Length: 296
Image (tube, one colour):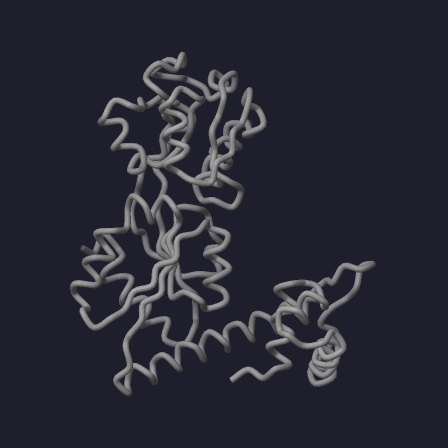
């Protein structure tokens, strides 16, 4: 069980600011400083340095943060395991990105719940960056996401292989087939916010061809996928998204696909969870049985 000093250290790592860490923990800033000094004395290392007013984590501080996060996650898992063994309600906590949550995961979650009637399920829908942070903190057991992630940090299986396509309104002036992304840069582009998996994949695909989002004539940024589809269907620009997210409107004739030779791709939707954590094998067993489509 982590004590108040290690809890303070982790909060400073999260906020990278002593004052904000003190506010989040409802303690004084001098108390935060005392806790950090104690840990530095105990481990005989420097955990933070100051660059002007900016707090910077040292290499030793990063090692301690990783170890403490692992310990905290293990303790949460152990606490839940003990509660389950004493007859408590089992709770599955997963995170999914917006596209996955809205268009890909419903049947899978329903099947899990039907097969496990005594469980509760808590599903958080957020962008890739936030879900990775939640995983590291142990707030969720695993995440289903379409964005890129540090593969050396997490274990994973493939949830699905999904085509990543370009769509526009039927009346959009772009031709149905494009040989180079350059031929689309004169048009308006509608994209998700920074940190979203969909935008991350688009930016990487553009970079391979030597382009970026800034090369388009104009860019509109919208956080909601349905809002993006509706504004594109109304004749405003084009967007890139997973086919599963656009199929309903393509079939209804409200959107049409634009085939782009040098960017059309199939991307993996991944299920990821913390590596080398206590009871990570239990999480892996649930994921591989219910959340790995190749196994179903």
